[in-house]
Length: 199
Image (tube, rainbow, N blue to C red):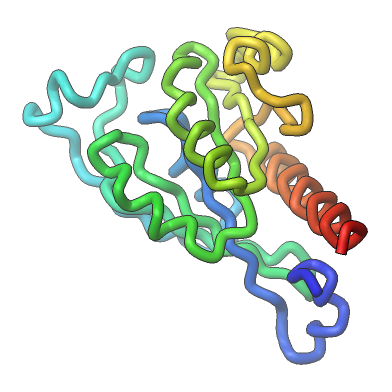
C-alpha cells in the first residue's frame, strides 16, 4: 500500500510524514520557496558569500545575492490532517552535490526550480532525478513576477518529457508554492496508481 493511500486510515494515529526535495541551480530560489510555505520558521544553512567563491559561484543574473545554502533548507507544512510535508532544499553549487544522495533518501518526489534566465543551470538537477526515477515537476520561478520564457519554451529548451509537468511559480508566494507542491503530489499519486494497476 502506498504512503498516500494509507493517509485516511492513519489520521487517528497522527499524520503521515512525506518528504520532498526542492532542487535546482545556484540562486534559483530554493530557500525562498521552502520558506514561503513552511508552517514553522525554516531551518536554513545560509553562509555569507566571500571572495573565495569568486570564479566558482557564478551570480549571473542574481548579482545581489550575498548568501548561499551550504547544506540544506528544511521546512514543514501540514497538507491536511492526514499528511505533513517535510521539505528539504538542496544546495545549488556543484561542489555541494555530494549531499544530494543523502537528502533524497526516503523522498517521495522533487520540485526542480528553474530560473528561465539561466536555463542551462537546470540540467544537472533534471539529469539527477531522471537517472534515479524520482518523480518530479519542473517549476519556472517568476523572478520579479516576470516570465522570461514561456513554459513551453522552457520544456523545449530542456527537452523535458511530456509526462513531467512544467509549471510557473513564484517562490515568494505561499499560494503559488502550494500549487506547485500539489502538482508534485498529483504526479506521485498518479505514478502510485499506475504501479498498483500493473501489480
